[in-house]
Length: 57
Image 1 (cartoon, rainbow, N blue to C red):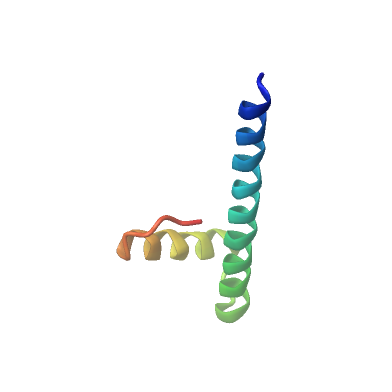
Image 2: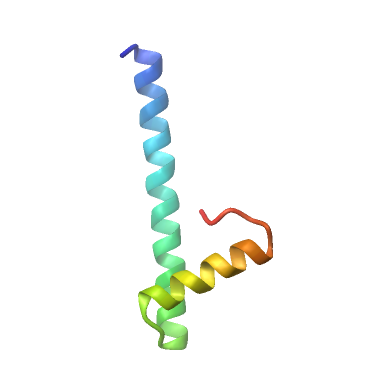
């Protein structure tokens, strides 16, 4: 694997990690605020994502 490809892959992994952290934070806030479990909170986030036509990240 070339250095450029490795750097690009590392960058993609870093972005995915940050995105997952943000999603987990939002899910945790919904869980605390509304007393729902993780699955329900994730469904709320997905529904809002689809409703607003924004990617969940």
